[in-house]
Image 1 (cartoon, rainbow, N blue to C red):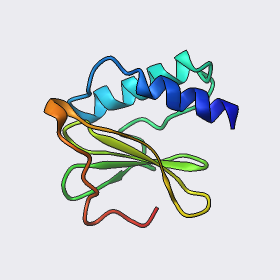
Image 2: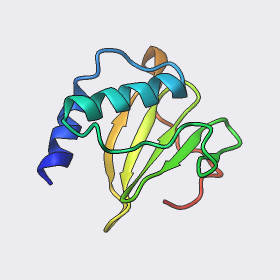
Image 3: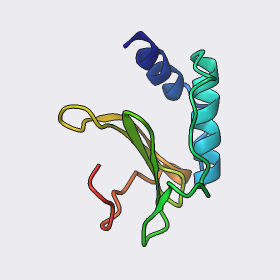
Length: 107
């Protein structure tokens, strides 16, 4: 739990708002490194396990979480345990809020 708390803190310190999925992934990787979790893996955007939604959003499956990234860089990390609560959410380019894709599989 302490490691997840450190990660949430570092995600909150992101200096820039990502403007595309690649920037969002890079910011998440940077936060992992700052939190001392550089050994945690994050699927590539072109990984075969990455689900592509009709609106261009991407769903990255982790062990206990799922990350959904919108085309404008906004993202949401959802804890898959319990009530599937949002762990962290970030606006994208120009303060555009995260939008859940309509064809997103249940997470």
